[in-house]
Amino acid sequence: MKLPLSVRIFSLYAITIGTAVLITNYISDQAAVPLIAAASQQVIQQTPANSEQQNSAEAIPKYLTIDALELSLNVNMGTYNDDTQEWTLDNENAFYASVSRKLNTENGTTVIYGHDRASVFGPLENIKVGDEAKVLSDDGRQFTYVYRSDKAISPESVNVLYEQSPTPQLVLLTCDGVWSDVRRIMYFDLVGASDV
Image (cartoon, rainbow, N blue to C red):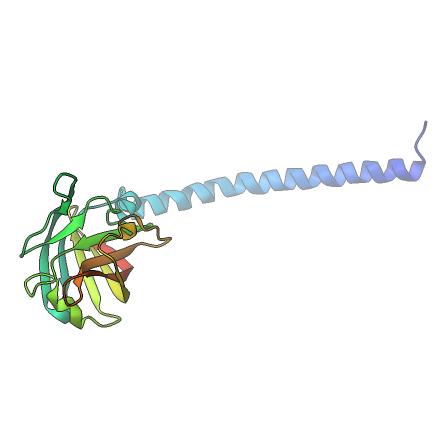
């Protein structure tokens, strides 16, 4: 069956226009390749090697300061002993709960805990919304967080250690209550990370 002349002319016209567009796009793309390559090379030259990888890498907390409370503490590795059913603790240092997420700029909850003593986390009773906490890491970065809120949980509740968060957050955990019968958890949001 023979197609009407008007259909054949329209088909030929569409094929011609389509081919012209493809050729024009190809030529434009080819012309853009050197420009894109040059721009990419310039960005590579201006970006320090592995800076993005370094910025998103995980790190272990080593030192905690909250200037508003004049609080400065070493942060040691904290582990749970299944035999004694106790966490690593002393009266001088804070501890990073090793089962929680390491410091990072992506997501998750980093937990640092310590005794509710004047020499450790006692000053936290005076913390105010907006106060900054700075955490130095083992790879030489400083993570800066801002205090958001707190809540009390039971000593048996361990969910905070594995709490998921779409953005990075720091949790400081200590005892609270007249008989230290509850745990106070304080939430901080990450506002920046930089080399020191």
